[in-house]
Image 1 (cartoon, rainbow, N blue to C red):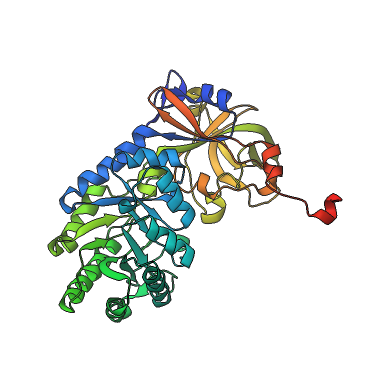
Image 2 (tube, one colour):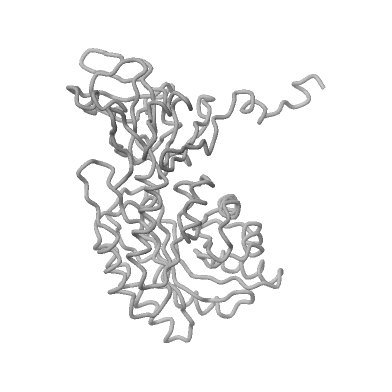
Length: 423
């Protein structure tokens, strides 16, 4: 569910008229709904109330500090994968004890900074990383609480580019090596073994892979405890899918929670989660304006002012986003198959292909739905296009939470060497 709907003939974000907002902010822009962010967080927290959950929002899917703050005041923690994301979490007011640090390539500098910030735990993904973390922690006379990210070799049945729990994926340590690595960790200075972590992929719409993975996770915790390790928390990652197409019905949090409870509830561990898309995906849209229509034989194109540099998911993942005209009358008009494309000089610059849409004219507005996750965070300045604004809506109020930069600011970010500037 989300809070984008037609009212008085115009698509609204909560109580904000998107046509008026487009006139005020300029297109293209991202728009996020506070009510949707809050609803999705509460659904997940309520479903897992039995496990004293720490819900660590995956910043990689939406890193705007206003979005992070919105979730933080509800009690959310954060899952970070870089020092920059950790700094964003802290800037949003998230305390260190509600932050976990994931990722296969943490540097010594990032480890040191995270230790200084007093984060809850590191998700360790290799023996080499473990040894580096031990050295950094010992040198600072600090203790790093860890969980190994264990790769169970389970196919999440999702897009191959967002599957992370197979043996051929770069993430985690093999399940067969876990006990030996935990034994090693116990022997190293500056390391506190405290948990186990597993994350098998993203946009998962079949609960069976979760059941298979969590069975292995529960068995591993039992084995580790029998070997004398104190395991106080299990981090089951994230990955539950969201509906990108009208009519899709991915599993709700409640049956997902039932599987977690069945497989892991007996352990008495605190539960950690790292949802991202589940909370933010349907909470955001991308609003764009038609520049031109173009017909070439049997093909019809809608050329809009958003492009692959603003929303790369269709190009990168062959992803589908439902598209709604901002005008309700246009949404009910006859349709023809059309490609929605941007101004970038790439054949791969498309936002939708062969989509049934009404014939729209110059200046008409479209909303790309379910764009709150992996939209703005993956945007770029390709073709020297400016990054686009992000807007947060709450009721009938709205605020620009990332302004559109100027061309002057973009150019000033670069410098001329002396031999070219005449100095």
